[in-house]
Each structure stands twice: as C-alpha cells, then as structure tokens.
Image (cartoon, rainbow, N blue to C red):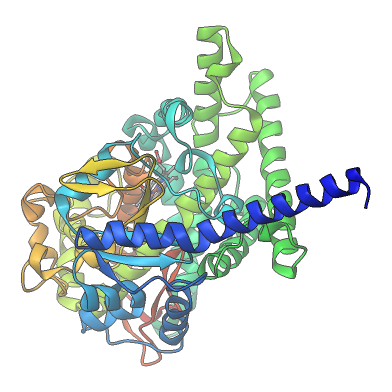
Length: 517
Ligand code: HEM
C-alpha cells in the first residue's frame, strides 16, 4: 500500500467510527441520559427500548382500538378508545409520564400551572419540528416560530376580526340552506329519513371555507378538499410509524403519492391566488373574503414599510390558504358531528336548545346579534368541545435547557399537553367529569374552570386558534338552522367509534334519523 492509500483508508475508518459513534449517541447514549434526568425528577414511564421506544405498543393499541367501538355513555371507555396509549400510561405511571417516540422522549403533563407557563413562553417552548411529513399537510402560521410567526399572525389577524366575520354570515347561511335543502328532499316522502350526516357536515364546512376564504364555490375547490383529505390520511399513517431521518425521500408508494398531492394542491391554490391578484390589480372583485383581506393586509404592510420583507411571498400565501382549508374544515365538521351525536343521545338538551333558538331567533334571518343571545347553544358547544375536542392533544418542544417550576427540562425534550385527558380528569373537573353536562358552563368558561388552564380546545396563550370565532359562528349558524327545521335521533345502525385521524372523527360515520318539524 502506498502512503496515499494508507491515509485514505485511515480517513475512511475515522469517518466510519465517527458516524457509528454519532448513531450510537442518538439511539442509545442520549436517550439513556435523558431517561436518567427525567426519572430522577419523578417522571415515570416504560424503560427506553432501542430504536422503537414505545412506538410498537402505541401503534398496536391504536390498531386494536380502530377495530373496536365503544359505549357512548361510558366516558372512561371513550377516552381509552380515542387515546389508548396515553390513557393506559396515565393509569400505569401517573399524571406526568414519559412516552418514547422512537429514541425521543415526550413528557406528558397534566398540571394546569405548568401547562399555562408552557403555552405562554413562546420562545422557550416551540412547536415540535420532528416529523417533516406534517409539513406536507400544511405549514404556515401553525408551524412558524419567532419573528416569522409574529409577522404572519399580524398579517392574518385582520381576516378574523369580528367585523369581517359579520360580513361572512350570508355565506355561512347560504351553505347551510343548501345542505338543509338536500335534507328536506330526502325526508319529503314521509317526513323522516335515515342519513349519515358526517359526509354532509364535511361538505358543508368545505363549502363554507371555500366561500369565505376564496369567494369561490365548493365545486371549484372540490379537488383541493379531496386531495387534502387524502393527504391527512397518509400523514397520519406516517406519523404513527417510526420516522427515520431521510425516509421521506425514499421512492415508496406513499411518499410518491404525498409529493404528487402536494404539488397538485399547490398548483390549484396558486392559480386561485393568481386570478385574485389580477382582479385586485384591475380594481375588480370583492375583497371581503379571507384571501382578499389577507392579500390586502400583505400589500399594505409592504407599502407602509417600502420593503417586501414585511409581507408574505406567494408561496407563503399558498401555505396559509392550505392551512385555512385544513384547519377550517376538518375541525369545524368534527365539532358539528359530535354535537349532533351528543344531542341525539341527550334529547332533553336538544329540545332545550331548539326552544331557545325558536324563542331568540324566531322566523327571522339569523344574524350576529341574535346569535350572541344564544346561551344554551353556547353551553352545549363548550361541553362538546370538552368531551370531543377536535384536536385531542398538542405538543411543544424544549428549545434549550430550562428550569420550570422546579423541573429541569433538557433541550430537545418534547412536552405533551393532552387536551382530552385533561378535559376528562376528575381531579380537575369533579366526579361528573366524564358525563355530558352543558350546565357546568351556565356561568361561562372562566367560572367552570375557575380560571385554570384545564380547558383548551382551541389551545391557549398567544398561539390560541386564530379561527375560533369563525368556527363557533359557523357552528352556531348551522346548529340553529338545523334545530329550526329538524329533530334527530340515533339510527339503529349508529356505531360509536370516535377515531383520531388528525382531528377526532366518527370512524363509521354518524347515522341518524332526521324528522322534519
Ligand atoms: C372547532 C374548530 C377548531 C378547533 C377545535 C381548533 C383548534 C386549534 C388548536 C388547539 C390550535 C392550537 C395548536 C397549538 O397550539 O399547537 C389551533 C391553532 C390554529 N387554528 Fe384552529 N381550531 C378550529 C378552527 C379553526 C379554523 C376555522 C381556522 C381557520 C379558518 C383555524 C386556524 C388555526 C390556525 C391558523 C392556527 C395556528 C395559530 C398560531 O399558531 O398562531 N382553526 N386551532
């Protein structure tokens, strides 16, 4: 061997040893070190298992619960059906537990004070950046941090002001009356019919977001909705399996499909934006929809500062639109479907709500002022969001080593904030925590929660859901319109199987019997 070959061999050997050391550190040394730090502070959980951690058990429990259904009257069963692994961990390890997402630990916490701190300290606790598959559903505001988040939140906020939402009421009413028109046709023969209301509610919320975001009709956006729905299914599948860095670049069937969907959705939304910008330049069009208001706010910011960096790029606007589609549609249809399911089960609350709607709104067109006087309907939505939160849990990441209320949290640790577990917790909500009782909200949310961070279906702190007023307005208009025209109850074919497919959805649909009033 000559000297050059020798040096080359030694260099290769050194690189290999270094890589091997790095891998060993990632998959064994670091997890074991973190495990020790966490266990010394009283956090309990399964012992770290090489590479997979708790992922196999997590995925197995999820698959098992997907093959079963549960008893709507048994809150404990519902909880263990929807979030089987966290529910099991809570029972086995107590109120703060470790879950091994592969070689990364997540600590789930149930303490309201800690939750409040974590959701308020934006710079110390950021959104997890772990799995890039999530980015294929939507990025935008929901994923940004620091200055970029501040800029986007400021530019998008005006689109969700109450004054702007007021202008969207006719669009909400129109979408509702179209859905109810279909239902009226279906019941016309004998005044009743059996119907899976879930796809109808999904179509309604798609229609609403299409009209309010783009001023265009559902038909134009239909392909986008189909694609985004398919994408969330693939992403959920990917999220449940162990993520190996770089694996998203492998030409697997799922990866290829996800990339193709991403490209198609970007191009469809891009052409809607192109058209809109042309209209705006020509001084045409109505800018009272989310896209128009967002573009207007963007143009103003750039003009004001004479600098493009103060605005969003077209690609960033596309991402925000994708996010509106996903965040605005899946979550609100989830809220509506569980409301109809729970009001089918609790007929006394359905009658109570109908009575209020008829008294307050009568035969008039539904307007914002009337809706603001609906108290029982509000209480019902709060309770549905407590027991069936569309987003069952959120997470944050420790950005650098930090001490919080006596806990040393190492950099890179993921923190789970289990919305659904907390909403069902008897220590926080009392012995009837698992029962449907909208009455608990009769004095409002702050009285029911005694101002503690124990109820956060829309998140909490500065990153609280930007669309919560939009969602509640849409839900109120829809429920009020339905209650005026129909009563509903379970069909004998109804099967209760809430399932987490990014949002909380009825796995077998929601088969109800509608009666025309
Ligand atoms: C019942 C309906 C809804 C529920 C339960 C819901 C829930 C949530 C939750 C829990 C978060 C916080 C996530 C976190 O902190 O990690 C969030 C954020 C967000 N939501 Fe909603 N959401 C709903 C409707 C909507 C609608 C209708 C839109 C838009 C049209 C929307 C857009 C967003 C956006 C953009 C964020 C990110 C905010 C930020 O990070 O600054 N959501 N939502």
